[in-house]
Length: 333
Ligand SMILES: Cc1cc2nc3c(=O)[nH]c(=O)nc-3n(C[C@H](O)[C@H](O)[C@H](O)COP(=O)(O)OP(=O)(O)OC[C@H]3O[C@@H](n4cnc5c(N)ncnc54)[C@H](O)[C@@H]3O)c2cc1C
Image (cartoon, rainbow, N blue to C red):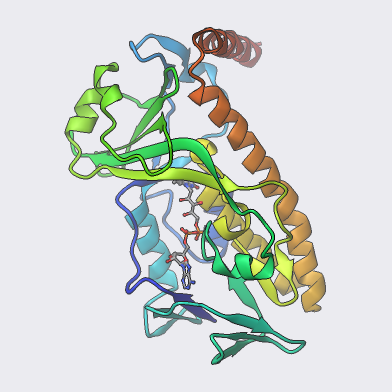
């Protein structure tokens, strides 16, 4: 298998990532061990208001939780197994600095840039996928969510279990990493392309201002997801995977996990179904509905967390508080 990557070298951004148990299981099945050991199981201390008052505490939430890991660590674990550039490791050859600009297919295979032939092409080229664009030129593609996200790693000792704080039109979340540092993220409603520091959070409860001031580099990304309905993930011998197929807003923390789950499903269908077309059809039938649900659910959570309407915020917090109490009562009985 050959991986074609346009970046000059493999690397990851300085931020954390939540990895859900289903994605950990896929990684382990593919031979990538040690994710849980390098992570902190996120203990959502719950949800707070910007002044620090609790809306709902962790003890009340009897829900499945992800592990939190630095992206660079996750990347290292994966590339240790597959992905030594210019060398074959785990049956994978990685070619960095190689940009895919043209893809053609016929009955027997796929040709990339007029020079590389393959039986199957997996397009994992992100939300602005040129391969998806080539397959579905009329598809609208990325849609701006109205929100920009800020992320950072804070090297500071604070005694706090983390969790999320929801305000009016903004949210802030943070979690401890295995090395004691904290990964944090925050959002703001603003037009695309607006740059600036996340200043509004400096008046929020501690340790939020402390985390921001202990951060060397703040990353900012305008948040896009893909227009619904999603396009079919398979056309002939070309398969869409990850954000190229189903980019979603990050409120569920499941975009990369879904890409990992896609990879697990694709490998499973290719292994169990000898006919290529049937295997790819099964992949699309499994993954497109599942990820469509996540794109929709993530949008709904985004609308709820980013609302600027004061009355709606009060109502939202009240519903969470009562919901938390009911869940805790149900767990006890
Ligand atoms: C603020 C924020 C927080 C997030 N938090 C989480 C989280 O906690 N948990 C989670 O699961 N997900 C999270 N996500 C989502 C996650 O980052 C994405 O879903 C994930 O990175 C998608 O992976 P991908 O490989 O499909 O696409 P990408 O990460 O976009 O990778 C695409 C790759 O293809 C390469 N490429 C593109 N075009 C070409 C070309 N023409 N030729 C060759 N190479 C090309 C690019 O260089 C890149 O390396 C978050 C996203 C954001 C923005």
